[in-house]
Image (cartoon, rainbow, N blue to C red; front, side, top):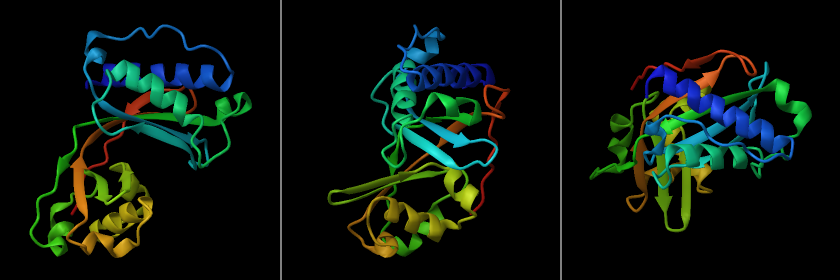
Length: 200
């Protein structure tokens, strides 16, 4: 995605969030042709200026066109079951962030103890699966919490409802993906690309 497309993605998500919180219908999505490509996407809402999570919902797999995935994720982010539904009086104190994902790839490793060597913190997002348990954390999450690779693996397991040491179980499967992240700097303000860098 170029920066212009990232800005359009955030503006589209903001339009949907504003409409959803006000109980209005979402308008027609005016987006470039590239938004017809199927992409995984997450929409994250943060409080401003406190930067507390207020909602985060998305689609890790490229199931829908980018435009459709953005609209659906933005609507659902207003109703993240971890929080009360977003209300109209909060809209001026919310930052909208969009993460556009690459398709997940399974991590192939003979010994799970080698996983921390493979995971690139600040670049990779993680999906974990074990039986019916499944969890996902976006690439920006370990950077926000200053986690190393082992903590990132453990916390992804926790997100899936497992104990943090389950990443050492050979039956646990991990997938990595990357994300281009674009965010408002202030509510309805300038949109910028988040350069997270990467470290091992």
